[in-house]
Length: 250
Ligand code: SAH
Image (cartoon, rainbow, N blue to C red; front, top):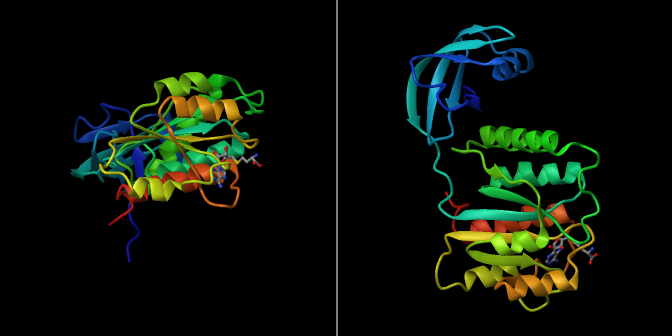
């Protein structure tokens, strides 16, 4: 069996002509890291819903050239927009949420600074961190076949995040005993177009944060009787939302 072609996102405008030239970043990944060679084929996408099969005609550490062999529709993005308001947690755990959330189908990540978000950067400059987050979601989107990489916003203070959240607002809170996320979603009369999902940090949400979110019209839900770590909760709740909306069906 032939292996599926590797996919990469390229900057807008890269695929305007039959002959393509890719810059140093991709040359490094394709040539150095993946050791692709002249003659190898890859799938390239500008993230706009189409993908192009390209045969490499030249690979150097500085530039990769190729020729377009064909073009096709990329996998459609989920119809429902899931925005994951994930509290900032330790860097490697937050990175995991970005990677797994992208694979599952999260449309946009909003990092949230809550009262108990202890870690707010670990000394990494904001620009470098944003760049790293962007790379993580791009690679996860390439790997999982997404038509477009999700957005990653700049971190927002909790109150602001609650204020800007759109669509159906849901907060996972381990103190909730009445209703689970799944039961709530299955009981909805109409399929929401946008779901804004709030997940707390390692130390959980403060009661005042839960109250504020409820007052903003959010539904407070349980993820079951066991306490999940923040990153587990973000990944599991995303999968439950997308499944309830039919986005994990074939
Ligand atoms: N420190 C808290 C737990 C926080 S878990 C405690 O020990 O009580 C981190 C976040 O994951 C929570 O803020 C919540 O958003 C989510 N979460 C984890 N387990 C959950 C559950 N069983 N039900 C609902 N939300 C949960």
